[in-house]
Amino acid sequence: MRSGHGVEPELVIREGEPVTEILAQIKDDPQIGVLVLGAGTDKSGPGKLVTHLSRASGTLPIPITIVPGEMSKERLEAIT
Image 1 (spheres, rainbow, N blue to C red):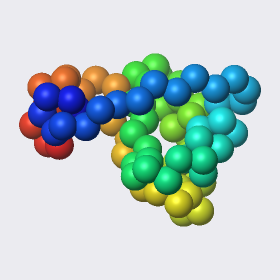
Image 2: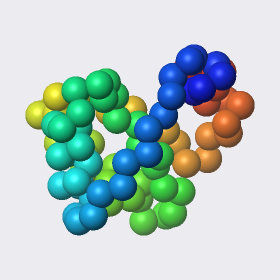
Image 3: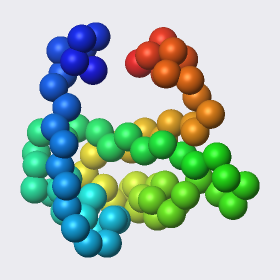
């Protein structure tokens, strides 16, 4: 993101229940424009975060992008 798009990522560490803290961070930071989640590759499903937040996607203030867990960095860069 830095070199290709001139975007400087910011590392934020919060403690607590992940879904609650992610939603709180989105609310606290108006510069967040999209939530990108990586789907798990396990046979049990895409993961708790992806499952919960995709169900709530209709009520979120920003769009969600779910990246397949098997997608290569090169393929991801090609489509973004």
